Image 1: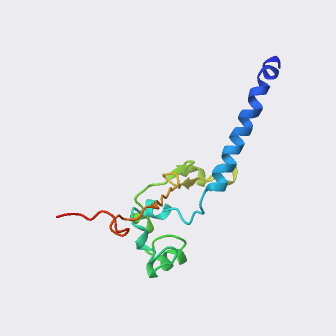
Image 2: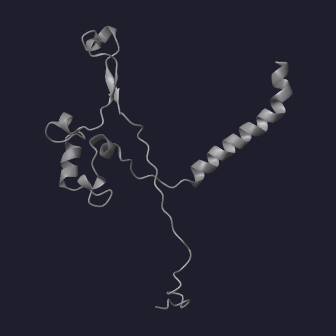
Image 3: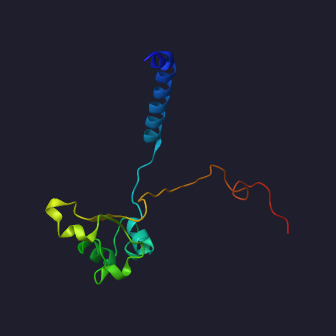
Length: 132
């Protein structure tokens, strides 16, 4: 208890700084539109299902209507195996045991970066001309 009283004057600013940093990160973040979870699972590009995001093409609509699985024989197209939770033997003992499920094999997080420059090309500004 004495140790807490001794360092409480350091703890309060540190917690405040941490919370301020979290609030700043949330406030300054841009809206997220999608994560490539299905693209990772099936090792395919986003254009397999999308024309322009978020517009789906015909295959993307069929994929969505089929419960986000390939229309035929989905297991052969999965390239990233899921992490199984529990043993298959637990299915028989389900009411008395945890029913085995699965989670994605990779963490479904994606980051995007859009960069712009406020500087114009020198040729557009009538600046330096390239001599040949």
